[in-house]
Length: 150
Image (tube, rainbow, N blue to C red; front, side, top):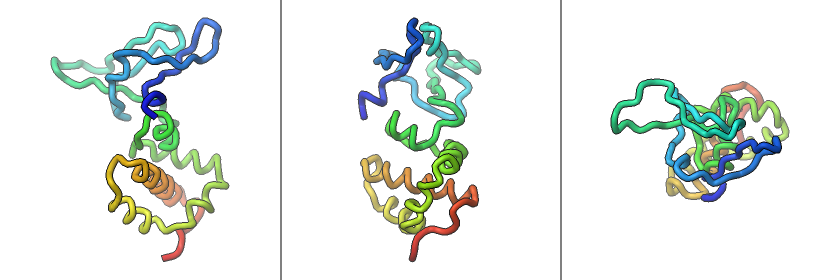
């Protein structure tokens, strides 16, 4: 996970994506509402573009992915979940309706209770967090009905 979370795919001169470790770039944390962005993944000139004035000593965060990046992708690529990815989670569930019955095997409230009692940041907490995020997305979108038995 550590290596995967520090790798950036950049388009090479051959037109293919190449996974690269890029020192310095991994210093930028993600914030979905950040006005700052990473540019240059297709032209080979990587740079962070300020979308707003930056004060001395102010942390600069960038947006990882796009508005279509789901929590499954955030977890798989970066090792974290983003509450702002709710709409992308809903789209993911619409694209993969076969996942809905699996998510309904347990109750959302039960999963939330187990998550609350789990060590934050552990692999178990991340897996439970993803399941809870997807169940919440399913409930918001109105697809799939209720969850599990109580």
